[in-house]
Length: 223
Image (cartoon, rainbow, N blue to C red; front, side, top):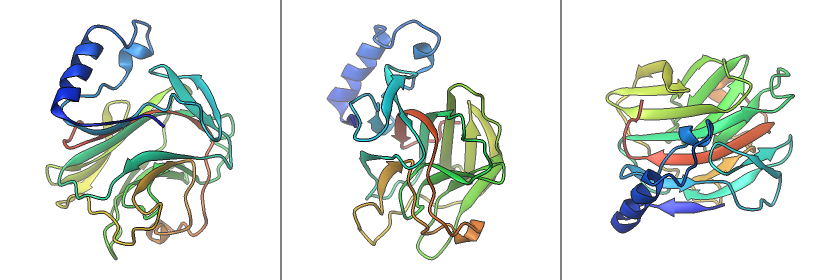
């Protein structure tokens, strides 16, 4: 998967290119996320995948995954992030709302993890031995939805399509897992082991159904 990592010269070039209209002018691409000075990582999901298929996305192509399919990103959150936002575009598959719990995106230790259960959208941000999470009513459009989890300003919050739908008091930054297995801190799409969800009474592994585009990790609160 394509990945951009923040560096001053690259940030300037990215701002110039996006400002010159490389995203296009149609209604989808005009909503696309941009790589700016607060961006730590960004994956566009427009390369030929190992699993799933490419579909029209918010910016170029997106990645559509059926149940049992997944993707591993070149975003590995091995460093602490005192204040941050993780966001991505998601378009539900035809069977996404069949009532089964579904993972969306996150690392296997649930230091960052988005999933759906019992008609709720949940954002997890675990620390060693401690479960932190925020959840709100699942209310997604049938098309592309911008989902975000963020921490900072003394809160942990969840946003959908630019609106904060749930927030709790929280004063801690992101802390990576110290297990350092291959997937403990790597961002995965569409796959989640049974690890680290017991506080939400989820004890089984999860799959997904839908399309994804533009995963962005930032060092600021964006919503």
